[in-house]
Structure formats: C-alpha cells, structure tokens
Image (cartoon, rainbow, N blue to C red; front, side, top):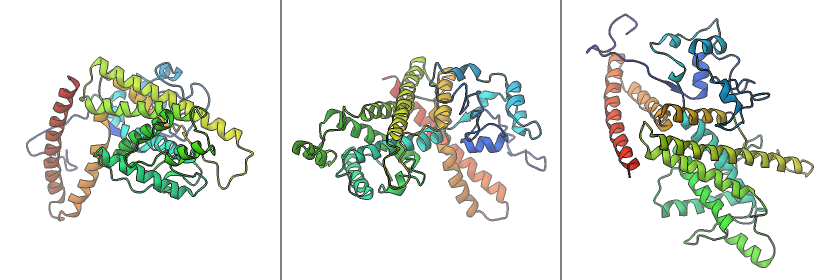
Length: 387
C-alpha cells in the first residue's frame, strides 16, 4: 500500500515477500546487527561460527562443527542475534522465517573469493617467471600476462571487458593480493588462470601466439632456472582450486532454478573441493610468509590466498542449495544491481509531475520483460540439464 493508504497497484495486485537478498553490508544495515558481522568475533548471522575460538569459521563443510550450531527456530534466532531495542519491521512479514534471508553468491564468490583466487594465481605465475623475467618490473610482467590472456580469450571468442592488469589492480596497499574485476569478468579470468596453472603442471606450452612459459622454458634449457613444479606444490593446489570453482560455475549456469538431487550433490562436491584446496593454499601462503619473515623486502609482504569471512558465507550457500534444492545463481544480485542502474536512469528522465506513478509504470514494464527473459533462460537451462 502507498503511504496514504491507497492501493499500490490500480488492478488490486498483491505481493508476498518470499526472499530478502542482498550483500553482507545490506543485511547488516537492514537488520541492525551489533555483535554479528565480518569484523566481529561472531562473524555469522546463521550460526555461531567465530573468527577466533570454537567453532572456527574456516572449518569446511559438510563436517564443520559450526553446522551443528545453525539457527533453525526463527524467534530464537531473533532473540539471540537481533538487537532488542531496534527490531527490523521486516521480521513481521507474513510467512517470514530464517530461510527468507538469502546471501548473494555474486558478492561472496565473484566479487570476493574469486578476486582473491585470480589475483593470487596471477602473482604466483608472474613470480615464477611464466611471463618473463620476474626481476623486471611487476607492471611489465602484468602487461605481458594480460596480452597472453587476450590471445587466449579471443581464440575462444569469449566476451570480457577487463582492462589491462596493473600492480594497483592486483596488489593492495596492505600487501594483500586481490584482483579488482567485475563480477562476470572474474568468471572468464578464473578459467584462464586454471589453464595457466595446468601449463605449469604439464610443461606443455600452448603456442598459437601465446607467450606463457616461453621465457622460462628457455632459461630452463640453458640451466639458469628450474621449472617451478613439482618443487612448488602451490600450482597443483591452485589448479584444483580454480578448476573446482570453474566447474561450480558451469554447473550453476547449466541448471535451472530448482535442482535435482544429483545436481545439488555435484555442486556441493565442487564447492567442497574448492574450499579444501583454498584452505590449504592459505596455509601454504602463511607458512611461506613465516619462513621469509627475516628476508629484507621493499614494502609490505605479499599475502596470497587470504581467507575472508565470505569463505564461510559461501559455505552456507552450498548447504542451502542441497537442503532446499534451489540454485544459488537464481538468488544472487545480478538482476538487482542491474535494476538499480535502470531505476536511476528512469528517475533522472522522469518529470516531477506524477513521478512515483511514472517510475512504477516503467518499472513494471521492465519487470515483465525481465520475467519473460528469465522464463526463456530457465527453459533453455532445463533442456541442457536433461542432455
């Protein structure tokens, strides 16, 4: 209903809220979490996982101890997690329960874990000499790596708007490795990084205009350097990690909104493999940092494969996909982010006279077009899953 008590829609249409989805910042703002958050000791709003203590948020599903502390009773959850003096009115929505809250896989994976994985893999390839002499400037090696990526992308006819890789795009001021890229671009880049790590493992150079590994293989032939694998186990683990998340993307993109048991199980298997290999890579990175703590270095030490709380939130999404048989791809915020863009454009070009009515009319038209497109995409995905 409108603020004046009138009907929102002239035809009497009513709506039922079935999900409240958004990124972590949105949920924290809406629900007024005070003692729960990614910077707090109790990091999760769905369970009692902690950043320090038991149960740790780094434990991997499905056998993690924190799975035994997941909230199931809505009112017990509200009493324990929500502030008593500032209750969010959304709690009074008809049919509200904990399952109404949805996390966004785009923010957790594409704009979180994937940025860390892509950046860490790229820095590992550069420092190993896959794109040229690692003693040369990082900016030069990153440009070479990007040229190789572009040759790879064009050969596969993949669309990607990623700009040239620069040190500031990959290495943050505190030394953490995290590649800044758009959500869809990260999906393309992770496939390239996985294949690049496979080049290190197989020692088979791709050719066809690609430059990855050429300089290093020449140095190995001259006896000036040694091939990094298998002496360095990072590339083997990185290949498993990147391949697993690429497979998870492929599975979610091919499946429809509602999953069969085997589809949900395959997604869980790929997700578990990713989580386990990511955790091992984080441990390996920390151990390497500890071993080289006395070596003089310029600037802060580079910390690869860092483990953020989004690792834990994404684990919850894996469990939800199995429990509810619903594809996380259909509860992410790609459409919502796009809606914010066109809603701003509509608002800028709408006159003050009848502003709300005009904006709502244009929004309803866009919603009808989006729903029609989604029905076509779901039908296509369902046909693919039957093949």
